[in-house]
Amino acid sequence: MTADYQEIRRRIEGRYRRQVLFGLHLSAFLFLFVVLGWGVGLLIHYLDYYYEAGGGAERRERAIHQAIEREVALRRGEVYDDKPKRDPHIHLTEDGELEEVNADADGYYTQEPKGSQR
Image 1 (tube, one colour):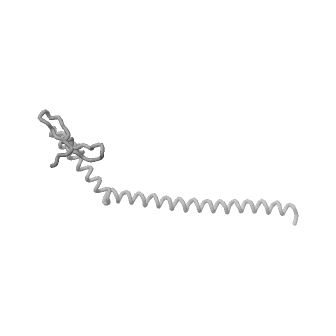
Image 2: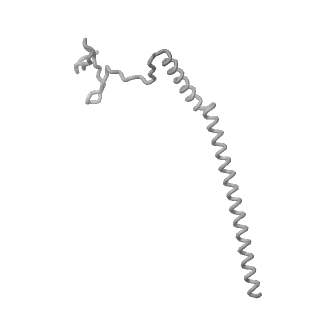
Image 3: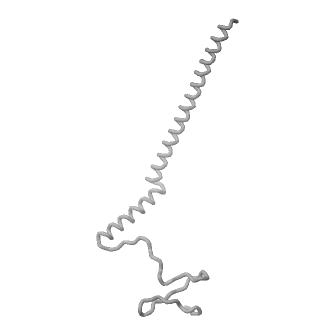
């Protein structure tokens, strides 16, 4: 075998190897593209189901109902407050117990004596 034959063979083997690697990379890319595309499609279908018929639908209906109540109250001139306020008649003591606070005649709140029983 001559040197020319070896050089030609080396060049053709390199070209063949690059073609094979290109085919492998292309097939891997297409496989991943299909798998990821399919996965994204499945995720979109799941989210669509969740918000139309699953747990998200209940949450959506509850939020819509609250917004309707709020809008109706505002149109009537009422103040709508969907968060209940804390009871001003109870407070936490230093030792971590809840104590009742009584309103006196002037509307000021005072603590009950410590030994009082209800």
